[in-house]
Amino acid sequence: MANRDIQASMTISREAYDWFLVHAPQKLTEARENAIKAMGMVWADEAKEITREDNHIDTSLYINSIGYNTGSPSRPLYQINEGRTKTELEIGADISYASSLEQRYNIFARGLDRSNSRMERVATTQVQRTLEL
Image 1 (cartoon, one colour):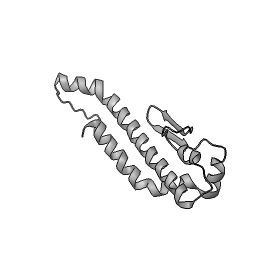
Image 2 (tube, one colour):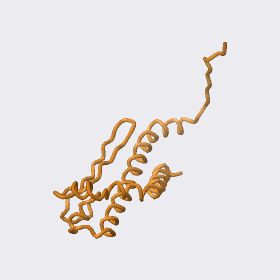
Image 3 (cartoon, helix red, strand yellow):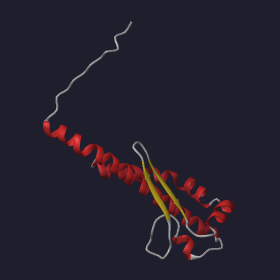
């Protein structure tokens, strides 16, 4: 029978210990949030581009209401839900006919498919920048 009571120890400087204790949890949370925000912006931008490409019956209000606030009078749906172990981002368009367009044309679903590789790249970049890697 194998012994499963394996123990290991190491010595680190007090400075390193203090950094990990204070900064690591905050930095990891910040990196996760930055990655999610960047991915959401890429996804929203792709949905906007699909809307323009497809020449949907559209107003600028619809495009400006997708994803994040661009300073226009729109009310984008952009809600970050932070949990202990995961972060979720809800994006959408807060106008009366947004759900009809999505049901008919799958704009956000197609945007997610088209932007997947770019979303991975921006997430990686944000994590590296935040953690100073």
